[in-house]
Amino acid sequence: MGISRRELLAGLGGSLITLAGVKYGGGIMEKLFSNKPEIEVLNMEGIKSFVTMVKLKDKFILGFNGEEGYMISYSKDGEDFSKPFLSIPNPIDFGGIFIDPKDNQYPLKGLFSVDRKSLHIFYSKDGKKFSKLEESVLDFVCDSSNQVIYDNRLKKYVAYLRGFGKEGRKVVRVETSRLDRKWIEGKGKIINGHGGYIDKEARTVMKNKAGYDVYNPAVTQYSDNLYLAFPSLFEATYKLTESDGVCKPHMAYSKDGKNFFISEEPYIDLKDKGMLFLSQGIFPIKNNDYMYGILSEKTHMTDENAIKFGMKQGYEFVRIRHKHSGYSWC
Image 1 (cartoon, rainbow, N blue to C red):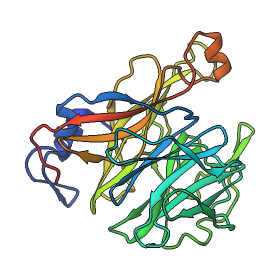
Image 2: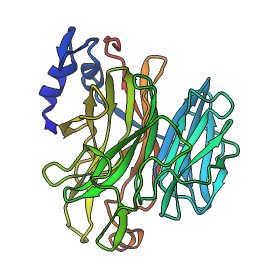
Image 3: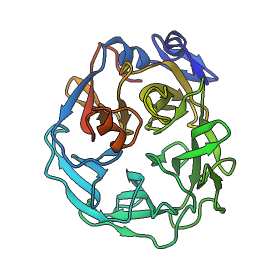
Image 4: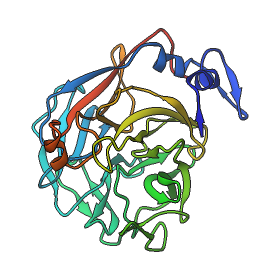
């Protein structure tokens, strides 16, 4: 569902209000909107696809797909990161890491696509070495920035995944109490010769509006009854190629993690060029709040076409800085 920025601010900003039976306060949306977000480029090379940022105790852990597999890098301050190292070799693709508060021995987990045929859980003490649970949790193709959070309200694991249906690319939601068994049975549907994708097998929580496909979910559970998300919406322009378009992050919120309201205006407007994909997680550091992601100068097209049209290839590692505006988080 799309709403204007004014409606979104009115829903969660200012003084204590009640929305759909849930009380909110602290000016969350005003805090995030009142100061224009600033994009900072950080030093990191070799990023092939989406990044995921988590914090384990006092250590920031960055994960991303590189040429040889899944890479891990560490940071103490969220700004200077160590040289990345190979943690999971190929074949591995779309997915990301997450923190499992129920497992003290292996608190760092990952959900990844293997050979683009199934999704598997990986586990690690600290990211230096991952092991894979042999049985897949899903036998679908989820070719985007899939993510898992441990929902403190439900006391369950919740996955936000790439879905595909008549409304186009979307985000679907699956919840489970265990990571070592199948979440959904089935193989999915074939679309345009690709697949199979999740469609009606799981609940749709973010979907196409005004012709925009939804890419990465970027969901953060801020409190028991407040979920913030920054999905990138694909605006198909078809100016240069049949798949050309831009991907801009929009702000969204939900009180239950199931029904998201998406702002109609981009959270960060890239004008008519480029793509920006954010990771889940909002990290307070000193007097700022940060999110992390990847920024591409090229629009939605293959690297071969990017070269043809003179666009820079690859991704830059960025963090989004929000200066505190005097509001406190609720």
